[in-house]
Each structure stands twice: as structure tokens, then as C-alpha cells.
Image 1 (cartoon, rainbow, N blue to C red):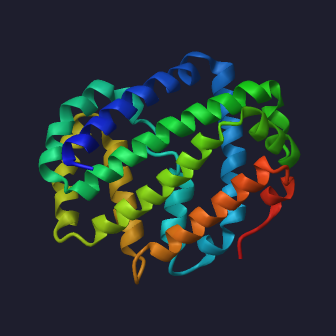
Image 2 (image 1 turned 120 degrees about the vertical axis):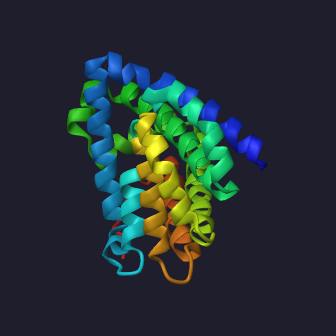
Length: 238
């Protein structure tokens, strides 16, 4: 993709994410159910990828993915501010940096959409989620193509972050962006980039192996759930 394409993707997915997040802000009950679902999912991810979290080589990257998997947490509240800072991002970030932000925003929006659909199906049952209930709801929501794209985006995001760490002076570039980002109310976006850069920079030998492990496991789990194998959610990595 070109720089202009990444910029347009970022803006499009930012608007989409903001629209999807609006309900969680405006509907307190929905927001609480969404938070419970995400807490359960975070626990599942930590269990599935326990060995990566315990690995000296992969720990930082695994922690980043488990805590930032859905992309920046708050930037959808700052749509106009992000639009104003996009020219600065375009001028100072390399393509891999723009790709990181764009893929993160697409992942953010898609995950919001899928989680919202899960919450709708679960209703009050988010207070008592089990592997069987989660699997049943996962199949009821369907959207296998979107689930596949969600995992594709994890791979693309990991690859973009890996490329970012191999660019000279990128650490300095991120520091240059820090103050303008904070002034525009984009501290979380900036922190996301810096956390990802730092986490992936700690891995020796590149991120290919790490990304391949995470993606393969998530694809296997998604396929198993659609096939009716609820046990896939109970398996631990390692």
C-alpha cells in the first residue's frame, strides 16, 4: 500500500471505531457487559499464550499483544484531533509506522464490531461466561470472514512493528512526535506506538517466529470453535 492509502485507511477506520464505541459510552449497561466480555477474552488469551508470556525472548511482545490487541484504547474519542495530526504523522513516520497505526485502527474497529455482536447475543449472561457459552455465542454470531480478517490484521500489525524496529533513527522520530501528539490529545496513540516499538525491539532475530506462533494458534482456535470443539478454549500454550 502507498502512504496515501495508509492515511486514508487510518481515517476511515478511525471514524468506524468512533461510531462503534459510541454505544459503549452512551449505554452504561452495554458498556459493562462489553467490559466483562473483554476481561474474559483477555484471560483466555493469557492462558493460550502462557508460554510466550513466560519466554525471556517473547515476553515483551506477548504482553504488548495481550494488552494492546484491540489497538489504541482511547483514540476514537479524538477523531478531529487525529485528523489534524495525520499530516505530521505522514511527514515524519515511515510507511511501516503509518501501516502500524492504520492496521491497529482497522483491528480496533473490527474487534469493536465483533465484540458488540457477542455482547448482543450474550446479554446478561456476560456475568457467567464459560468456555461452552462463549463457543456457542461465537458460532451464533458467525462472521467467519471477519474472524479471519481479525487474525490477518494481527499478523500485519506484527510485521509492521517488526519492520519499524529496523529503521534507523525511528526511536528519535517517535520522540519528536511525542509532544505534538500529547498536545493534540493523542497520548494513547503515541504510547501505543512507543510500546510496540519497544516490545518488538527487544526480540532478537526478528518477530517472524513470534507472529507465526500467535497467528497459527488463533487460527486453530477459531477453526475449532466453528467446528464445535469447545475444548480449544481450555488448551494452554506451552
